[in-house]
Image (tube, rainbow, N blue to C red):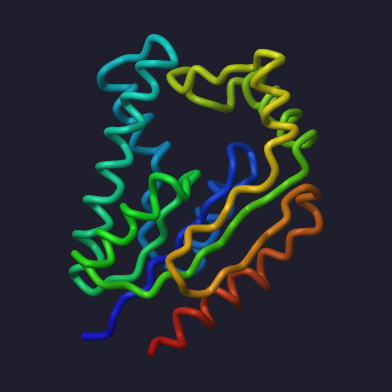
Length: 189
């Protein structure tokens, strides 16, 4: 059995990682696991209250994400995982996953200008485009962090890396990204 490929789509909130991962999953006919999708199912079943509850649900969602990925990868199936993966937490998690169910990592890192991200966050909350269970904080201090924190750091787990700047969505060449990922899937060692 060939080693499956794990396509890791990461980025800070509002960088377009969900939109991109959904397009990849549809075009490449791959399963997609999303931390926020798991969180929102739990919010719908268990309810929501405040940011601390959202963080607790998020921790459970990430555990579900890795557990489900291990099951799929162990069957030899490639898949897409999408979340705002953090080097300090997810490097060790990915290494454990790699030990449990070997895979070839391919990372796509979505980035965008911080001012654009802050505007997107404000807009999607105002338009009700995010589940209220996320309890998105739009305080001036949090929005300043969004504007100034810089790009998310890719996980140091090897494999190929593609950085996609979504500051201007009109400039994102989705077909080229799909072709790049397809070539990564086709270049199995």
